[in-house]
Length: 354
Image (tube, rainbow, N blue to C red; front, top):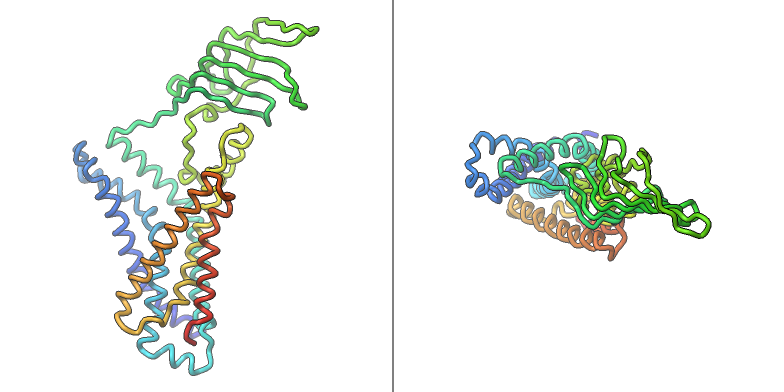
């Protein structure tokens, strides 16, 4: 227990310094990427600082795994360079037992990362993006055309020529109704429909039904039967990163029910969970690297941390891209890099000095 407290006390100051350094670096990279746009629209310096104040939580979310990796590798390397690890090993304490407190830190960091992302990062990132769009005069449009969607488990099929997001109206609307067995019940056609806040109000609608083997047509009076949300018809550009995890899960369910593409969104949903586990993964990986550097510990730990982080994020980018395109299952795309690096960490830990 005394050694556990000692190790954590050695680790925490280095972690906080590394986190500050990486947060500053990530914010600076994003600032430089957009600085010319802010200058072009003459955005005041105070407002630029305000934008990046709300970007700090997202920067911390990005920086936390790298900081944990660097702090762990540096702490253990520094203990080894001062011959403290040698003394500990000589006393008969296994390396895995000595470093178990850092594994606990990684588990707690993963739990913190999940809730921090859900409760803090997402709201502040939305404010940052909204401010950026306002200052840079970027408009987001939800208009869509040539839409075909399924609703109510396939009992309704909507075909829309054009959805106007400003007026919240549908133009060139056709609705096919089916029964439980999938048999045709009716076809409703209307030149337009407007959203009342609760349902779609159809204008000059006609309904076609089979009666006595003949296709009959008659005017359809006012009805409040069609209550699919306007979000269903908006441009299909869903960003799971901007939604809390509960709403992201509901989005996946809604897309499935509407018959819309959902594979990419499902992959991003799984990634919300796998990304939280990265903090634990990097701790395991960096423990296996601890004690391998005898000279230039600060420089070598930093370089090793950056190299491992780059390899991990490149692998994650490739697997997530393949998952979004449907080449591999979404859950594999999200969790494969995590599982791979856990395995690599365990294999390196077996060969670590003890």
